[in-house]
Each structure stands twice: as structure tokens, then as C-alpha cells.
Image 1: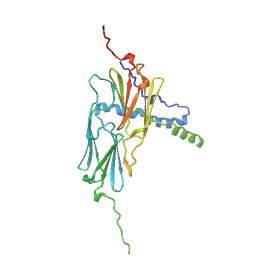
Image 2: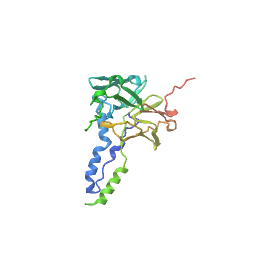
Image 3: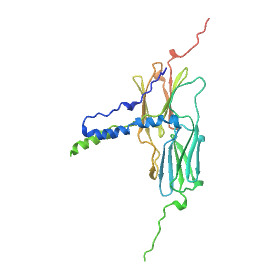
Length: 155
Length: 123
């Protein structure tokens, strides 16, 4: 028996087709609704966990920002191989004896997320921080990958 | 064709904030329910939890790390998190407690004394 009922709060936000001129906007909005993200999340149950990863770059670094809520620092592994950054780890079950899971959407177990980096990086200088469930990996670019200003003397 | 209408439309759209429903899990044992909600990027300051009409609403506003650089690949979503749960009448709403750790909110919802299982001693 489900004692706490699941509610997906945004599903009822159905567009009101008040004015026809709005139709296109409303349809656009419909596709931005959280339902789609939710749907994507639910398919994780079958395909494992692929944490969302954002990649930034500036002149000196590539910066990967990964959503990894509820991990222990020790359980996150970052590796670099052949220009591919891999973030892997394991989220452990926290339930105790006597608990019965009512409903669990949270992913438990091993995960692995890889991304091919657009430039070469210096593997020895990679650093990472983990805060509020967000992992930030800073990968300094290799010298040859940094943009260089070449001075041309015009005589 | 009609600029006024277009302007109004944009205003409507920016006013309606959209949220993502966060992933969660509920565990029940004899004394309490434990609710875990994943909100990466949310810390204590960005968290709002409200109980009203036997409904628990969790709202998490993200404070994402500011990255010095240009975005070249995005998978994360920008919206904040919000989700509502209906509470079982057996929950003592006055004793709900919450903590947030590494982007996961853990709520402890104790059951009221009268519904907890207990043994009755026979004299």
C-alpha cells in the first residue's frame, strides 16, 4: 500500500489555447515542460545512471561540471585516458534492516560517465572539488593546445 | 502584425517559472518515513520546505558554481527543483526534520505515537 502518494506537480500545467496566436508559443513551452526531463530520468532505471555533464573552456583550462548528488568524496573516481575524461563511482545503498522501500527513483550502484575532451590536457595538473552534490573538474590545457598570440612584425 | 500582443505574450512567459521534479525515494520503517530528494547544486540557503493541508512541498533553488569560461557542452538543466508529496495522516507533521548533504535532502517524518507498533505487557 502506498502511503505517500507520488505527485508530479507540473504535469497538470496544460497549455490554455486562449488565443490562436499563442499556439506556437504554447507548443514550444509544452516541450520544455519538466515532464520530458522526468521521463528521461525514469528511463535511467533501465540504462543506469548517466549524470549530467557540462563542459566549459577558457584560455587555460577545460572545466567539467557534473551533477552527482549524494556521493561520498571517496567514492568518486576521475580518470583520463587518451583524451577521454571518465568519471565513475558507486552510490551505495543506505537502507537498513527492517526498512522496506516504498518507492525509489534514486539510482543505486555503479555508474560511469565519459566525455572526449576537445583539446589535449595536462593530466598531472587535474584538480577537482565536490560541493552541494556538484563535481567540478578543472583540467589545465596542454601547452600546445593553448591559444597563442603570435606577433608579426610588419616592416 | 500586432506588436502589443507579442509583448504581452513574452511577459506572460517570463512570469511563469518552471521547475524540474527532482528524483526522490521514500523509505518506511516502524517509526518513521525517510524521504530523500536529489537536488544537485542546492544548499541550505536555497531550500524551502513547507507543509500545508497535509502536503509537503520542497523547493530547491540552485546556487551553481560560477565557472570562468565559455560553455561548450550542456546537459544540465537550469530550472530550479520543486515537488509536492502528500503526507500520510499517521505522520506527526510537527516533528518533521530535514537536512541537506551534497545536494540530497533527507527528511525524517516521524509517525505519531498512537500509530507506532508497541507491545503491551500482560500483568
